[in-house]
Amino acid sequence: MMFAKLTNKQQRYLAIELLVFSVLLLVWLFIAPLWAMQGEYAEQAADLRFQLSKYERAIANKGKLAHQQSALQTLLKEENLFYDNIAHGVVAAKLQSTLREMVEKSQGSLTSTRVLAEKKTQGLTRIAINVHLKGDDLVLQQLLFELEMARPLLSIEKLTISSRKRSRRQSSDAPGAHNITLEIASYLMRGA
Image (cartoon, rainbow, N blue to C red):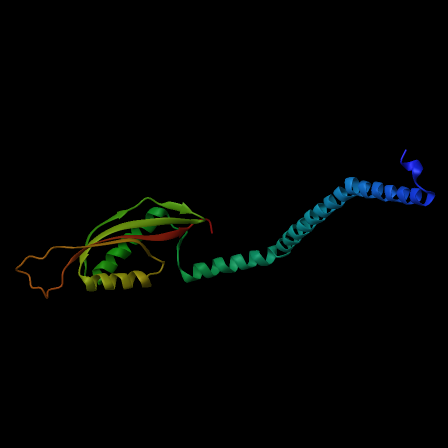
C-alpha cells in the first residue's frame, strides 16, 4: 500500500492532516448549521423583544392616551364641528333650514332640497342634502362664503353650475343667472 511506503514523519503528518480534515468536516456538517440556526433564533428573539417593548409602552401609556382622547373629544364638542346627540331626521331638517336661510341671505332663489341617504363611517354619520338654486356669480360667491363659515361644518361634496342662455334682447352687461346644484354634507357624531 501507499501508506506503508511513507516514512514515520510523513505518516504522522498524514494522520494529523486526516484528523484536521475530519474535524473540519464535522464542524461543517454539524456545528455550522447549528450556528446558523442560533443566529436566526437570536434575530427572532430580538424582534420579539422589540414587539414586547412596544406593547409594554402602549400599556404604560394607556391612561395617558385615554386622558388625551377624552380631552380631544371635549375639544371637538366645544368647537361645534359636528352635530351630536340628535336624531338623523332632525339633523337633515336643520341642514335644510340652514341652507334655505343661507340662500335667502345670499339673495338667491332656492328651487329644491332633497335629503340623500346617510353613510356611516368611523364613528360619524354623513348626512347630505342635494340643493338646487338659481342665482348669479355674486349669489354663488356669497353662498360659498356662508358655507365656509358655517358651524357645524358643512362640506361641499359636489358643485355643478350651468348657465342659462341669454336671449338677444338681454343686454350683454346684465349679470347672467346660473342653475346651481350643490351636494352639501354635514356629520353626526355617534356614541361619543
